[in-house]
Length: 165
Image 1: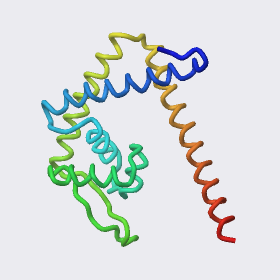
Image 2 (image 1 turned 180 degrees about the horizontal axis):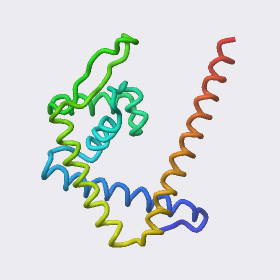
Image 3 (image 1 turned 120 degrees about the vertical axis):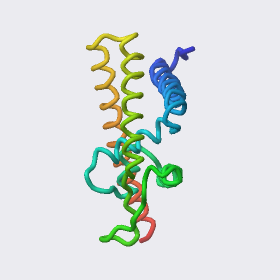
């Protein structure tokens, strides 16, 4: 129920609840066929979109994972034989991640499943214009969060340099 003194919170809460419900639904669809989660499928999609192996930190930023979350996801996918890690030749501190042949097949299967079920879900409740608007709102929100995070990091760096004086 929305609070009278904070009506702007309600849409955000609905978005959050709906997003989690969609993730749970997609997880069930994927786990029954390709035995991975939606988040794992997103990592595989990101890897498939690049012709070169990806640095783990860049990959994590692309799918909005924390460093530890990305490490756990890659370890899980590596254990399944879907990705492989190799040391970066240009930066010995970094690991590069790439899809294995089995990972490419799994990514393609998962992409078909998520596209099919996503289209069915959104097609059942929204017109084409509404779907485009939802997509644009999502992109706008991610851009806004990125700008805010950059500003927070900048402020933290400034605070740290001031404390060191």
